[in-house]
Length: 102
Length: 173
Image (cartoon, rainbow over all chains, first blue to last red):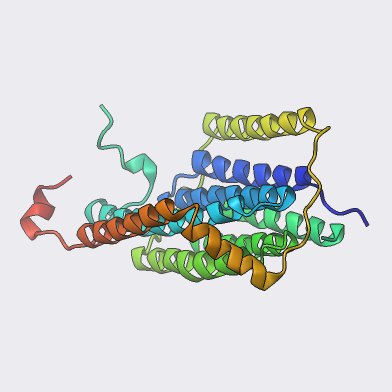
C-alpha cells in the first residue's frame, strides 16, 4: 500500500478549489455562492495542512487557525448582509440585485 | 496514511462538493457542504492534524453550516429557484476551473523531482503544546489582529442587523 504523496493532496485541494470557483461563477443564489466561497477556503486549509505535514513544520497548521477565524467572521458579516438585503429587496438572486448597474 | 482511506475520502469529498454546487434545493446544498467538511476533516486526520480536524468540525460544521441552515430557513426562498446560469456563464465557469487545475498540475509536474518526504508523526499532546508555543511567540501579532478583526466583525453584524426605520425602509433602494 503506497502512502498518498503531497501531490495527491495538492491536486485534491486544487480540484475542491476549482469546484468552489465554478459554483461562485455559475450559481445565482447568493447563499449558494457564499457556500462555494467557504468550500474554497476549506480547500486552502487542506493545502496548508498538507504542506505543513510534508515539510515537518507547524506554520501551515497555525495559518489554518487564522483561516478558520477569518471564515467565521466572514460568514457572520456576509449572512448579516444577505439578511439585510433580503429585508429590503425580497430576493437573494444576484441577477435581481443590479441597483449599481448603469 | 493508507492509500485506500485517502482515495475513499477524496472521492467522497469531491462528490459531495459537486453535489453542493449542483443542488437545486439550498438546504440540500448545505447538507452536502456538511458532508464535504466531514470528508476534509477525515483527510486532516490522515495528515495527523487531529486538532485541526476537530476545529474544522467544531467551527465549520458546528457553527458555520448551522448558521447557513438557520438563514436559509429564515429567508423562505420558495418560488425563487433559478438554479444556474446558461450557456456562456457555464462555459466560462468550466474553462476557468479547468485552467486552475491545469495550472496546479503543471506546477506539480514541474516540481516532481524534489518532493519532501513526510516528517515524523508528532505526539498529540506535544503537538498541542507546540501550537500554543507558536501562537504565543512567533504569531502573537497576528493573533492580536485576528482578535481585533473578530471584535470589528461582531460590531459590524450588530449594526447591520439593526432594524431600520419605517420611513427609511420606504425611501430606500
